[in-house]
Length: 218
Image (cartoon, rainbow, N blue to C red; front, side, top):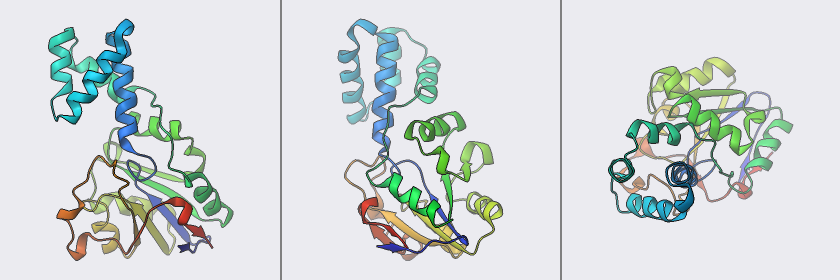
């Protein structure tokens, strides 16, 4: 798929499950927590935590009862740890090629500032990002149109493309603003996997792709 980019273009991304798989952050956080609370037997604790999560149990409630660790301490580790995560194949080439064509790059993400900035730093993509909108900082979450207008107010270009994954909240507002929209198809590991519930026109992207390796900047 060809993506036309020039100095009048901004390519804007969601973060979680769009530039990497969010489950990798979860696994990284669980490992960090397991090491902190059960250093000498952390693999067993990690295994238990992930099994509980997959069984839709409240992991932190159970850890609190078993290890007598305050839930606030567990949540703090989860939110503030430096994650071991990697961007999807092809992401770095795609971002670099946008820059070669003098395009702008933005990220709009829901979450806490420390958590989301740690993710971006760990992915190694901060050098590409010209504008970052985080829900905790701006005071609203997607699909609030304010989050997207904040990017427009930063770049002031004519052509916007938003790349994301979550049909429920990602594409409604940018479409209202006249942006082009592009969905990364779930690779089977996405945290949110209920896109089938949001197949009405207002939720749908303009187009879809399966890998950043299939996107060509022209």
